[in-house]
View 1 (cartoon, rainbow, N blue to C red):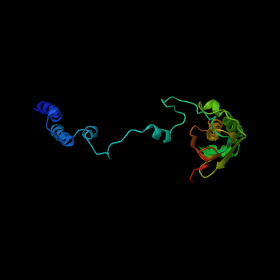
View 2 (cartoon, rainbow, N blue to C red):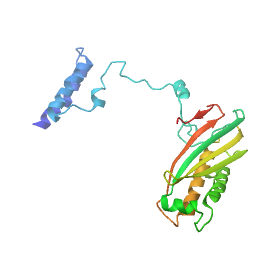
View 3 (cartoon, rainbow, N blue to C red):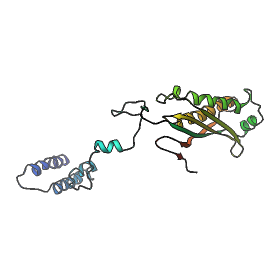
Length: 229
């Protein structure tokens, strides 16, 4: 019985569309939806029921090429979706700065060992500082589509935080050129954080590197940006 009713429901649209008499398309599909609901206990999916809508407010027009050009997008993705390195040659050189930060949560036991400089590998903060500076200088070797730029200054600061038994790391990168230094600053704090982990892993494996983020940048077409406190 159900199969017979389904066959009737499927065949009815042919009568709607082939009849010489004028039928309202929306009304015809609404009738079909009711017939389908009587068979399956629920109306068809929205994609089917909305296909006959003539309301211009509900129809989405495709993006024109002009809109696509003006819409924000990923600069490292080409028109056909392939990865690409951004051509910065048309840009003007300007001073670029970026500040990034992260946190390494040690736990009380490891925190006390670092504070007392009693770890077997030596001075954790000094080694991590040098590693962070070196990481910033090698960013283009680690991140495939980053430009190889000349850094005029790199700063990495590590501070012990007794409130949550962590090390707070801040890094700054500075350059004068045609592309930003956000990735250099973020690489600096990330490599410094990984170095802290490496120096302390013998004492504990439960160390977490968290909140790697950009905090501030200046220069370039997008101008200055600062994370809200």
